[in-house]
Length: 209
Image (cartoon, rainbow, N blue to C red; front, side, top):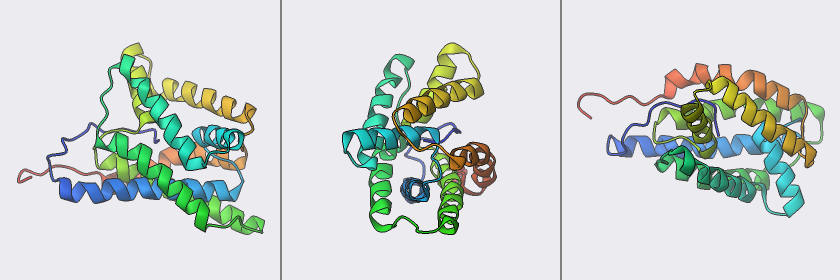
């Protein structure tokens, strides 16, 4: 679900150490999504679409994210992208974590707490993004779509990402998803924050591993 990618490292390299980081990062990502949803101040582009579909279908937010993730994964086939363990885990763990967070976190009653949830959600989302990308076990479905289109078309990642997210945001908004100040804050902050966290959590193979 993030906008950055590192070249995958084979799972056979230090799997015991990497798996907790992968699943922890994905769980934190789902939790951060739940906090942003509860803030009701605006969501990131993909979650605007997820929320709209959830409202219209009656499915839980997590179920919708999993279904959309699986559909996006199908788009990898003509792009010749190969999923990794992290790709499959992305679909499952995030869906469970976001629904669990929504089940235990009540909607705040004051604007101050809504702002706190938004800031916490965006910050933790960046940390989670860096954490699961840094383990280098495969990109999420949406990340792979972006990099696959870039590889096949020669268009820069920046332009491809912008085109995808503008399209998704517009579709989600038209379907009734929540767009607000949080959407703008997320767009401006997620890149720099993720970049700041990434060096702290990126896994690098050593000679003895």
